[in-house]
Length: 243
Image (tube, one colour):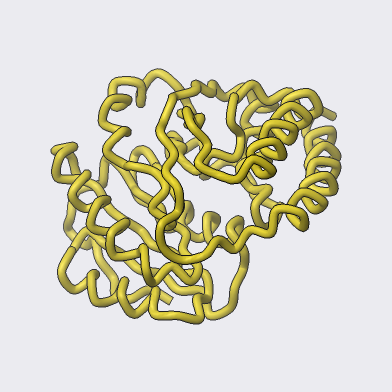
């Protein structure tokens, strides 16, 4: 469900900013306003797309209110939770920009850091952020390191920080990559499929900030177990592509 239709008669956006959100009422206003302000600094047509993934709090209500203020903002709601992969699929499908940037709604990244990489947009198919300082617990930091090591070895992905929620895609590239996985494996699947298809991936360093508001939906131990199964399933999909 869209809050309202927009874009009629407007120029094609240079950049679509896609933000999946689930129960982020404490963060969503800041994230949206920073994204809108970023578009003004960029000086090129931008759109901001928030996909509310069945939140049980006021996330979508806040987004709708802000959409009345910012014409470049579109809000889409899933009536039921479809997971991060489902939210991104919806956002990528709705995006009209030449390039698509995606980040999370937890306010742990500064979108303004993207300004220094604008000159790289036309040189690579995917710009993949890597966290200079992972503002997470020691256990999650270790688990993330181990996951990246295994994923790179198993899938051939060269990105330094596969799970980093700070990525830019050529629109025609990401719209051509099918997403079949669910939940938090989505970034791994996208980069694995992109690697097999020969798309160029370039790492860019970004800062990572501790979550100050709201609660993460990630259960480290549960996601660690799911990740191992997820890597196996993605590997099977990749082998099908190679055949």
